[in-house]
Image (cartoon, rainbow, N blue to C red):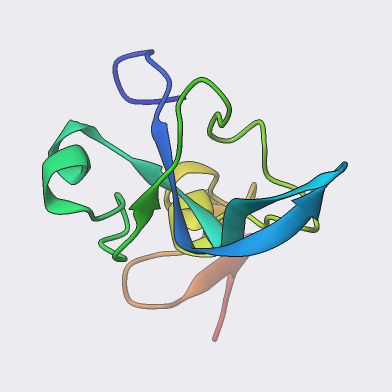
Length: 102
């Protein structure tokens, strides 16, 4: 997913050696992050976290996120707002059932 319909490149907080079948290879550690074109040069995710870029042939945002490799919550919050987000006003007042609740 991205703003122009293309897939994001994936970055990770770091990499660490892990056993994968019968060999030890470098695998992501920490969260997975979405990386845009500018981030490919700067080494930063869309959320501005420094990342290690992952092979785009093997890793896809957001498809590869799971319990072992959780997705960046900052970016998920920006791209997947809560269903009731429209009920909040800028001044922090939540409008519920026609009334204002602080």
